[in-house]
Length: 472
Image (cartoon, rainbow, N blue to C red):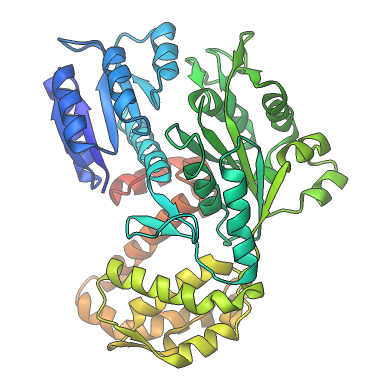
């Protein structure tokens, strides 16, 4: 649950935002003066602040300066009805996460709040690494005592404190983002912003604008100046996730940032200087992309000054028991299940599998087993792999139907007991809600990409998000 402080002297707007954001599951506190806001933030240390720029006692930019000194990682979104280019640029230079002009649409503010809370989570949730830090329940953990993982830990420790560019390589599901966050959190820039950009999830036409910003009128729909992530992340660290999917035109600009520390916004002439540490990750073979002319060789060498390679799970099977026990304890707490132990036969089954989805697939397998478990023991039959009966790579609809039957059959009686009436409608809505949540999760909240993945229009997706009160 995200904790939000809303500060505005417009009481009706405060009421509207509190009601709307509370319906999405956020914990919202409102106040109406700058001094109240500073006091609340110091007392509550919220996950995000919505701050009006013109308050009775102080200007928003003054409040922003004071809050940023004590809470450098806290995302602050400036709201203003008197938006000027100078105000917007100054707010971003002072460290605002973003700004929004009044009046704004519900979808616009909801999307911005979701992005701010996600950024806060990435910056604040610690990543514990054996030999570098101690694990607590408030942190994520990179797990494994195998020899290959020990080498990964050493390398993270060696590269973290310098500002060197790091390329993190590994198959999907091996934990590349965790490594990036660990490098950031053990670096000299740990008190400055950290932003992650998924280059594969953002449409090619929008990626350059997302990274470098644009001027008003630069292209159709550019109705105001927009600050890009590099400018927003000045003095901090940026992760270019799935960098192998970046279009060539954007690659050229990234190369210039790495070489000169400067760029221009789309449609602008002003050269902007930034001091940003760049981390990049990919599951693609960049060397092959270079041969195909899809990735710049000079950018490749700039990114791989230091390289961290994460091994696939099938090459470190000695870590499976430790990983399994970690996910077992994590999900039993999260789900509130009564399962208290693991049958030893479970481990034999896990060891025999080849794990194409790596650690992420193992986590999903344990979570699914706990949801379906009956009794206090996690049994071998509860372990259902993603690729059993070709559940990932279906050759035909018959195989897909068999896999769905295998998952749904043991649940049918419980479902009919739960919904004695309206079974068809209720179940279809639950499935639809799950698919939309999953698509939004996979695309990091990008509605255009999520709609494309689902095969529906963006308007349909937006209506479903509102219908199910989903968090974005």
